Every structure is written in C-alpha cells, then in structure tokens.
Length: 285
Image (cartoon, helix red, strand yellow):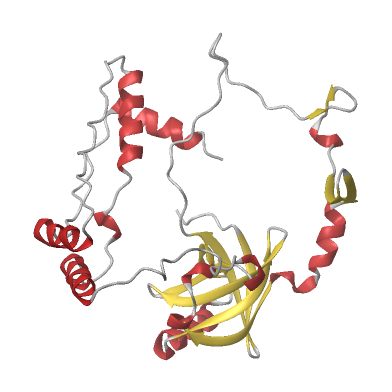
C-alpha cells in the first residue's frame, strides 16, 4: 500500500512544470506518555480556559491573535492568512542550483520525499537524472502549512527529496559563543587528536550502528510493568577518571580506542512488547 501524501505541489524548472506529491521522510520514535489522574488513573482532558471570563472556552469560540505589544493583540482569521498565500502557494519555483557541499547543514529543518504526481512521471525523472548527473541541488521557496519556507531539492536514492530550511534571519549568530580561541594547542596534542580521529574514522555513515538505548530501556520497563514483573534499574555507567593532562588523556584514548561496531538485529517483539509499542505509537500525535 503506497504511503499517504501530506500534500501536493508543482516544481517549476524553467518552462517545465513537474506535479509532485510530498511524503513524510522521517519522524521521531520517542516514547509518548499520556497524563493521568493519580487518584483514579483516568486520562486527563486538556481544556482551554479564559481567566477574564472565568469559564472554559469551546474550540469553536477560539480565534487567532498576534501580540504586538504587551497584552494587546491583533486578530487574524484563517481566510486572511489563506489569501496571503495566493495562487502560487503550491508552486515550488526553482531559483538557482548550487553544489550541496556549499550549503551549511545548520540551515536544514525537515526532510520530505517527493513523488511524481499524475502526469508528472517523465519531467520528474528528467529532473532527478539531470540533478544526479550534475551534482547540483536546487533552491526554491514553498508555502506549506501556513509558512513560507526556503527549500532545497536534491537527487537521492533514485528520486527527489525536499528539505525545508531556515531563512538566514532565523539562524542565530555563533559569534558570541566561547570557542576556546584563547587556549594554546601544542603540536603534539594536535597530532595525537588527529590520530584519535583517524582511529575512529569509518568509510561511510551507517545509521544502523546507532540506536536509542534509553528508549529501549523505557520500553522494556513498560513491558515489565504491563506483565507485572519486578523492575530492575539500568546499570550505572562506569566512572571516568578525571585526567588533567590533555596529552595523557589523548594517549589513553588512543590506547583504549575501539572501532565502530554494527548494531545487531533487534529481538523479535513478544505479544506484550508489541502491545506496549503499539500503545506508545498511538499516543503520539
């Protein structure tokens, strides 16, 4: 069964129009909890409350407001915001192409898969192949979910991916952060640090080497609770001896270094584990 599309749009590539659909590429798998009443165990319902009228407000009576000065708001309707998007809101108009390595990752926000919409199969394939061959990525703007975003489109895994990005004025300056410029680094320390990096270097990035160990422990705790088992605390991490001398610390790190190891297959879920996982997934909205 094909995935559910989040929305649709059109890529404008010169005089070529490419109808596309957007799909979620990634999402957090963090364990989600509900708030319960400690007295009876019932799930709590969140309510919107007006302190001026001293009453609970129904969702139908809520309006948007922007605070332009302290406690003074400008009301805005959904229709007014929609009108500002205009007819071109679904148009992804490519402004320029740049090498991917010229784009600082700090600007990346979210990632979406782009699929060809009906009638757009050939131009989609053409753009994907051309970008793959040229090694360039496309920059454009796109209005989605009530926000205009700078977006980057790149060829990947045989198709096209779209990354929403922050605008320049949304990225905080790094200039006021202490970067340790006053420290004096010795040549020997730098050489050992480079050797340590080389010793831990991998040929490529394999995300399967890493897993969320904390999430696994939380799910194991929930499974144990669901099955009425006694809980066991996670083993305490080994205490690290404080090493004052930087050169000594580098030498010890080199001696103790271990190459990255791949994470093995996850154990098959038991019925109780599967039920807890399904419940946790259902709590995330």
